[in-house]
Image (cartoon, helix red, strand yellow):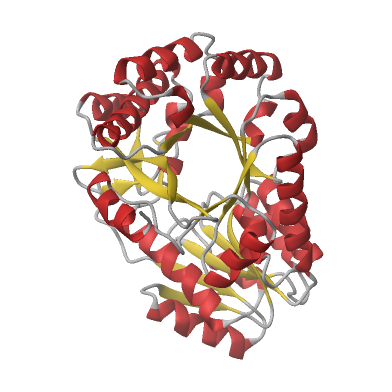
Length: 399
C-alpha cells in the first residue's frame, strides 16, 4: 500500500487573476495547486493524482458543459467545485447534469466569489481528503488504494467500523432533539475512511452489507440505550442503503434489535435518500410500511434532489422530511432556494411530518429557517459529526 501523497488541486479559469487568487487560497488550506487557463490544456493535465478541481463554466472555445462531458470519460474521480458568472438556475442545471455524468460536485458558486465561502469549502475538502485517501474498487487499475469485499468483511469482524454522531437541534428550544449516526471505517493504517469509499463495494455483496447494517444498528441502539440509562432520551437516526430496502426480513431484524436494547421505537429512525426509491418501488413500500407498523420512524433524506419527490411523499409513510443542504446553504443568497425551503416546510407540515433543515452553517441561515417555521436544524453551525465520547460536550452546549 502506497504512502498518502500531498493533496492536489487543479484550477481551470481563463481569468488569470481570479485563478491566481483561488490558487493562493487553496495553498493556504494545504493543497498543492496547478493552474490552467485553457480547457484542452486542463484536460491534458488532469489525471487521477488530483483530489479536487475548480472548474469555471465560461471558458472560451470549450464551455464548461463540454469539459464536464469530457471529465466523465476520463478515469478520474476528483471532488469538483463549479464556478461561473451565469445565473443561479443555469448553475443548478450544470450541477444536475454533472451529477448525471457521475461527477462528485461538492459546491457550486456564483461569481464574484466570496473569499470566506471558497476558503470554507476548500478547508472542508482538504480536511476530508487528508484523512480519507481516495479509495476505489480493486478492479480499478488507477486507484492509489484498493479494497475488496474480503477486506471489508475482515474489518467488520475486527470491529473497525465505528459511528460518529451529528446532533439535530430543536429550533424552538435550542436543545438536542436527536443525532444522526454516520458510519466510518477506523482503518489501522489510513485512519478514518468515509463511506463513499467503501459502500459501493459493500453494496455488491449482500451478506457483507447485511452484517454492516446490523453492526451499525447495534452501535446506534447501544449509544441510545446508554444515554437513556442516564436519563437523557433523544432520537437516533441510522442511514439505510438502497440495497437493504430489498431485504424483506429487514423490518423484523430492526424491531428485534430495538426491543432487545430497551429503546422506544419512537426514538429510533431510518433515513432513506430520495434516490433509493428508484431501485425497487414494490419492495421499498413493503419494507417501509412494515417498519412504520412496528413504530420505527422514517425520514426522507436529501429532499428535493430526486425525480418524483411529491409522489414519494404521498406513497411512502414518512414521519420526517429533511431538506437537502444545497437549498438550505444557498437560502441566504438565493431567493429561489429560500422559496424551495419554505415550500418544503409548509408541505411537510401539512402532511404531518417533522421538517429538518440540513446544512445550517451560520446564524443567519438558522434564523431564516426559524422564520420559515422549520422544526429542526442540522449542520456545522452546531457541530460536525463527532465520536461518541464527545456527545457530552454537545449535550452541555445544547442541553
